[in-house]
Length: 325
Image 1 (cartoon, rainbow, N blue to C red):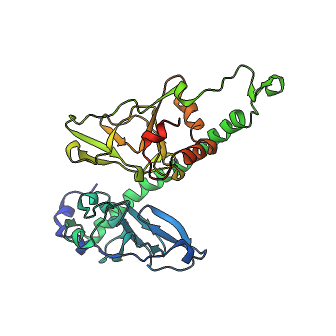
Image 2: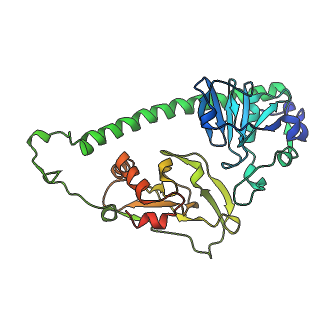
Image 3: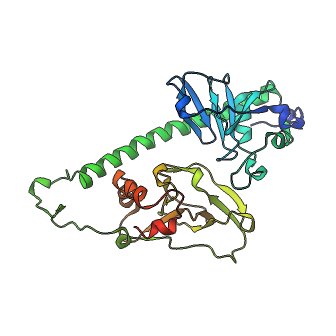
């Protein structure tokens, strides 16, 4: 814990005194050749290239698209044009800068119109309290320890999820379930099984907020969801929230983005905050006669994802997609 005389040594300044950001460098997939250096866009590492533009360790924040996202690179890297990268860390601990930027709501500095955009000149003027180097090191060291524990647990969860996924495919896709040798297959379905549509076992988009709602919400947009997880939420007063902030979610719901479904932005909702709201670009699937654990495996198979890709055109909203379930 940092307390006592240490706090008195913190200095008032601006973000530019802690770190100076520079716009990243444009590069297309066609221009890249395989290599060890990560290409970091506003959404994180998207590929690896044989060349780098920035020396690590470094901090990268989303400038366009996934606005205000924060990424860290231990080694050399290529910061994409959609980001701002730490050209000069001003002698600051890189990890401390990385953790500090997570406490700043950079999305509120959006200056874009149709596409969210961050202006580095605006963020450099943000007032900050800068601790001395030894305090930065202590804070970074403590938080890094927690990060390592979280990463270890995340890997364990991935292994367990992969085990469940393979078990589902083995039993319910390949039909290699226990007792299959003695079970007749009738019209492609084991005897005693039923083939049903999604609407027979779940509801889609059961609840939405009305315009009369008043209060704060915790919002999930499509860009913040990657396969199997919600990476971040954003707090808004409902009156100031995006117009798509309407879908109500409950414990056990499954969200599936019908905007560019090929990106597979889906996740299970577990113990959500009472004010958690997701974009209308999601189809919110509420199980009615099946457990979430089973239905989640069914709606994340390659065949289901392919079905959505074929029936929900890029840029379409979930209303059209919903009619196809």
